[in-house]
Amino acid sequence: MTLYIDPPTWPGHGRMWSHLISDVSFDELHAFAAALGAPARGFDRDHYDIPSDWYDRAVAAGAVEVGSKELLHRLTKAGLRRPKGRPPA
Image (tube, rainbow, N blue to C red; front, side, top):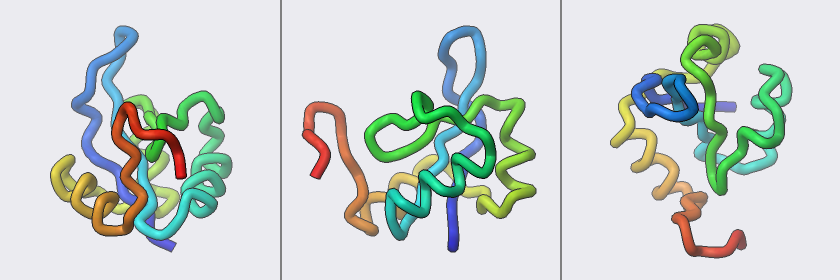
């Protein structure tokens, strides 16, 4: 099981955010996020938005730190990318 997280460089709602993805399946992603305690509302099409104060917790739980470009590459290569405007498969 490998999950990936990018640095918390994405602003929103007065906080900084990371993206958490799986390059295997959404089931794997949802299970990992649930184990972290991430609410279901944090899921956004193909990733979870993770607040910066949870970043270290996600890494300690096994998420691999990668840059944002690498994260997008892995998500796209796995066929799990769901861009805005495209309905879920």
